Amino acid sequence: MPKAGKYEYPAYDLDTCIERLKKIYEVSKSSIVKKETAAEIIGMSPKSGATLSFFASLAMYGLIEYRDGNVEITDLAKRILFGSSDEAALAKREAVRKIQIFIDLFSQYGANVTEEQLRVFLRDRASVDLPRIPELVGEIGRVYRKVSPYLMLVEQPKAPAPAEVAEKKEAAAPEVTEARIPEVLRIQYGSFINIAIPMDRLDILEAYYPTIKTTFECILRDVERKLSVKEKTAG
Image (tube, rainbow, N blue to C red):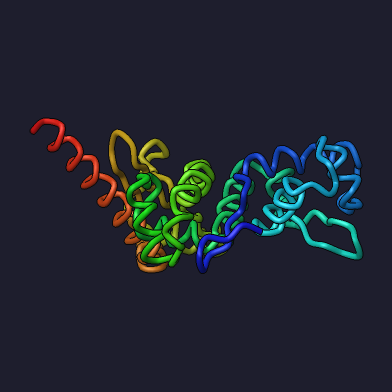
């Protein structure tokens, strides 16, 4: 599988992997398929370098496992392919977070990394040989731009048991109309930034504080970068 200094990285983005894996399943009607058969289904030569890179990418995302010359579609992949929209989204986040270089890039630069930032990262964090950096900036940047939105997703806490809900309702303050009840936890970054947490679920703030903190640090870095570019343009 491709390497960038101390990191390994997938040659294919997650959506491409999912699209082809779905076709493999739909044609074979099985979660266990011979590797050669799977390659032929998606129009790839079983022994080509591109095919080896593709299946290596599937394995890195945790979408397949190898068993006696066969590839087996994992439970994680099945949640993406057949789960609800929420289940699929969280499963995609889990898949992308299996790639350490993506986690480290997101932690340092957020979802939108520039080519210059990626060059610095590959040189200083990944310890990549200088002659290889221009090539890797293109390859890794292309994949990262497609998978980074999944790293912005925040896992929702499990819904409380019915008994817990009943107890909280009895002890609750004056009733709030349904239209005013916010989502349990929502972080949105676009035209505005908003966090909505019900007053009776402040425990969520404590439980998810590291995630919230990391998300806002990434947002602030992104805003600072955009402001810096705007100031340079205006100057």
